[in-house]
Length: 212
Image (tube, rainbow, N blue to C red):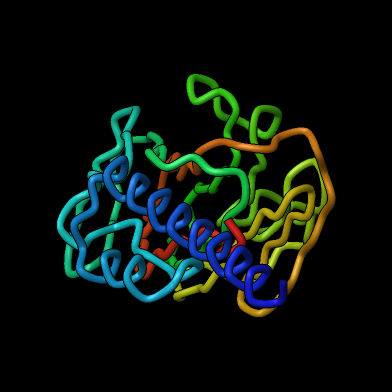
């Protein structure tokens, strides 16, 4: 009985791992990513990170508005117009981390679990400002849930990690952790919203939890 049980358990584990690989592979096709690092993420283990910008274009995103997104030297830069990039990938639980630089007059936010891509705002998604919106709504806030005081983010490179795990939401900006619990939105794409100034992005990586 012991050997039979182990055989069943091992078969079930292999089925789950294979299912995870298939899901990640489908995500790769949907994103249109051909980066070697993404292929490596599938081959090594589930839960590994893969890039959301391939260094050549923004094919993993759907742009809207008239913002001019320029891929230059492994960065995505925008200084003109206003608009949004919406990810083609939409999952319930995730982690996304990246580095960004903003000018003093920049207005930019990242939204996650967007439930209505035709109307993206703090009511239809979770908004995390990348710039200080006011003295009491600073960069790294989770709008309507957990606001931070303003902090220094302009004219420097900043590192941000955002995660959604069920109702547990977390943002870590330059080492400062901000957390909230909410159940309003449980799935949807990520959106980068630019409304003026200058925004530069690099090293954006996405992680799908290995438990899937």
